Image (cartoon, rainbow, N blue to C red; front, side):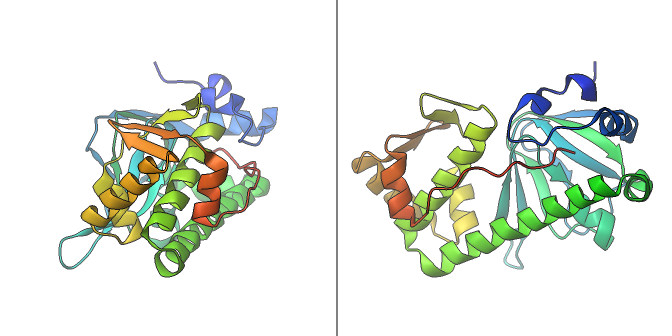
Length: 242
């Protein structure tokens, strides 16, 4: 059975803004169903004009673009609570693809209802704008890592960021979390070769800062890892949940 918005497990996470009873009722009407997909399933395709929008309820995935060479450029990692398909809703088509890395459950929304959503709930429309701006902010940070951080620093940055997201969602335990991505995915996201990525991860492991193997990420000294990544400590920002 589909999860009701009233019983959504993500609503209990302190990282997400609380919905009023009015907003909750509207979101229940906006949601048209749920979709369960297996690992490797394409959810949205670059250039497509999908009639659906999605929120990742469970599981993780990838946002990526295909280059002319056929290689893949990862542009972001999908975590529970992420809103998918907004680009097609606003621009007419997707500028990137989204693929499931694990089994995923997605809340499905009818894109045609989005404009009524904006008209009747302008405060929620602002939330959608916030989500789009946050994605742009992350991509800007990723570009900074490619241009200004060396390989070890860039990987340390990515591991801290993903661990922060997992911790905010209650996905970590004793400093560890399930991280289902491949090293190639991380290499693609940071513009590194797989060999360079592997060697850099080994350096972090040898310094007893972080270990990522068999789908498990463990940060052993997050403060030192922040220093390596040239990251200031910051509290996670409370974000909207669609």
